[in-house]
Image (tube, rainbow, N blue to C red):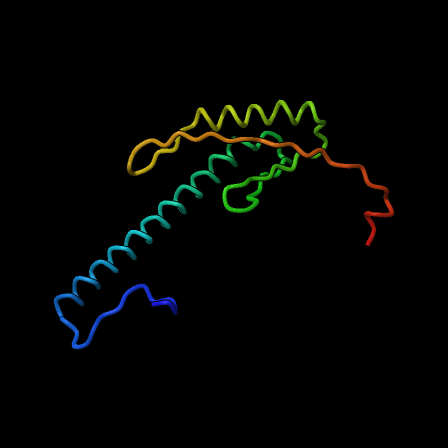
Length: 126
């Protein structure tokens, strides 16, 4: 057990005990698959929702940045404009609950801004 085993059976194996343990293991695997499927469905719905909410100008680029993080590239947008857009996104996310098979799921989000730093042309060349 110290080597990493989660369970053990003594020999001779009792067939009823083995069936019970296998059934319990199957329930755990089924639950894990259900959780993974629900997480992926929520991610797909969040991606569609965010893409719809974020696309204002044709040249804005919403992207996935990690599991539940999104990145929005807004060329030519100053800090005041980005702040206003970030607040619109935050309030729109809170106003758009997700419809899940089990019911409605309310969502909130936090938004951070990182203005582009000006770089000398020599740093942009490879």
